[in-house]
Length: 279
Image (cartoon, rainbow, N blue to C red; front, side, top):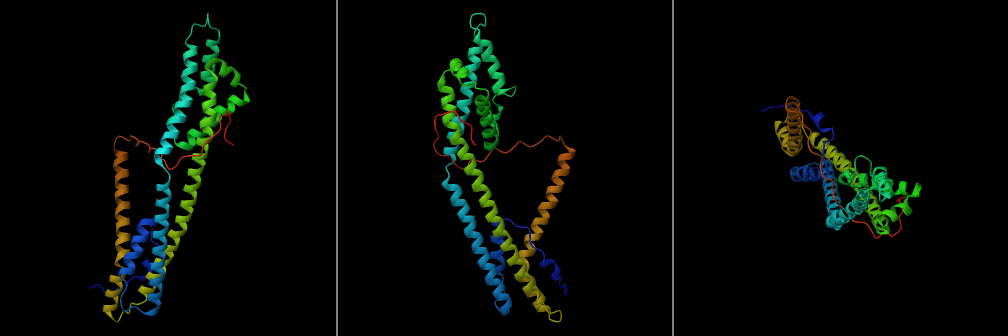
C-alpha cells in the first residue's frame, strides 16, 4: 500500500459546472468520515449547504426556462419570417410586370435590392437576436428614406402594417430572453464558485487528518476524498479524448460541424401596428 499522501492536489478548485458540482459535493458529504474531527464536520456541513443552494439554483433556472413557452417563440418567429418574406415576394411580384406598361415595376425591383440586398431572406435563418437586428435595420432604413408611402402604393399598406405589429413583439422577446440568460448565467456562476470554495475548504481539512505515522489515516482520507479524485480523473480523460478527436479531425476532411440551432426560450408581449424600429 502506498504510504505517501500529496495534500497539495486538494487546494486547487475542481473544474465544475452547476450540475456536476452539486453531484460532487453531495458525494463528498456522503463519504465524510463518521468520526471526523469538529473542523472537518463543520466544513462538511458548509459543503452540504452549498450543494443544497446549488440544487435550488439549478431547479429555479429549469423552472424559469420551463415557464417560457418554446412554442410561443416558434410561432412568433414564423410570423416575423412570413411578414418580411411576404413584403419581399410582393415587391418581386410587382417587378415581374412588363416595365413598358407598368413603369413602377423597375422601382419595385430596386426596392427589393435596396431593402433585402443580395442575401435576400437569409437573415431569417439566423439566431433570434441577429435576425432582430437585421429586421430592425430594414425598418429603420424605410423610415429614414421615407419609403413607406412608396412601398404602400406598390405592395399595399397591409405589409408594412403587419411588420410594424410583429417587430416590437419580436424585439421584446429577444430582449427578455437575453436578460434572463444573462441573469441566470451570473447567478449560477456565483453558486458554482461557492461550491468550489466549499469543496476546497472541506478537502483541505480532510487532508489535514493524515498522520504519516498512522497508515490507517491515509486510507481513511483517501476514501473520503475519492469522489474528488474520480471527478478529476474523469475530467482528464475527457480532455485527452477531446485532444485526440481534434487531431483526428485535422487529419480528416476538415469539414466544419453544422451550427447549432438557436434555442427558443420565450415569447414577447403584444405590439402596436405602426411601423417603428425597436429602440
